[in-house]
View 1 (cartoon, rainbow, N blue to C red):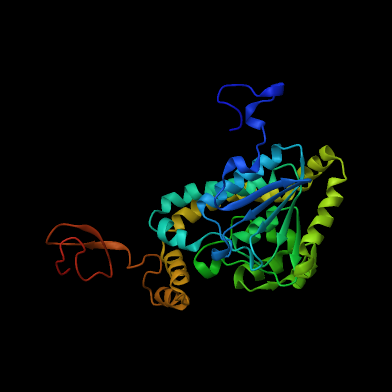
View 2: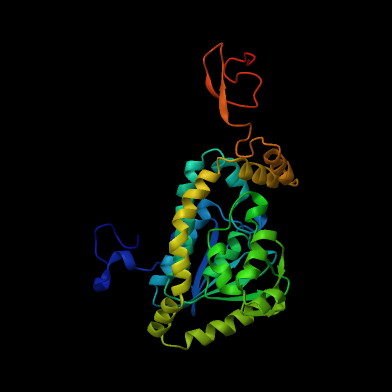
Length: 331
């Protein structure tokens, strides 16, 4: 919080709404700057293709909150470091190491993620997505949370939920039908195919596509047009055009938060995210085959039905031949 604890700032403004200098935040995962009416927020994890961790989302939320409060900011630009990726969604390594082990914590994480998305949508300033490379998964959800998007010619857009054992219910299932229509949305969500920048422009997923060398100029030209409009009218216009996206978002995101948390206990995210980390193809058909044969596809080693006559342990997976507690052979 800006200002001293318990001490009102100069000018009588509430301490809770005081913007700060970007340097005061000492961000680790993002770059944040404000100059000439434009705030720039850059996900600075190029080695991970600008995927975001829990900490990244928390930093993004603070930066958007600050830009929202700062009357010297008219437009916010969101982008990723380098020229390979805008954002590739959540850090799958973090998912695999943390949330497949403690699914209950994914519910907490999803609250942080939806808060970051809301910080973009509700910041009161138009937000331009500067798409400088791969836009994947949650990265495309952040793209759609922004008001406008300018893409470099080499950018590609895709959803990845059904490839990695998740559901793209952090904005994609809600907003893709609004942006590109129902059939195209289903194609993106079901196939997880790349959508080239020019095709994304034709579909209405971005506003402009330019050569990579012209990306900054195109973003700045668009920002200048917004700066030279009345701020209060612009803010309320954003609130009005948010209506359909607000409606679909608030009707579904809480349900998605709980379902995804429970789903992290199943084999699909375990297999999908482990395969991603191990750099191999997920065994999609193996899970399908298990179900087709009448075996369990909902549990990694079958439902917890067996008991050990030697030590009395219960809830042992159906496919275990030995007790995991005492090692005895199961009858």
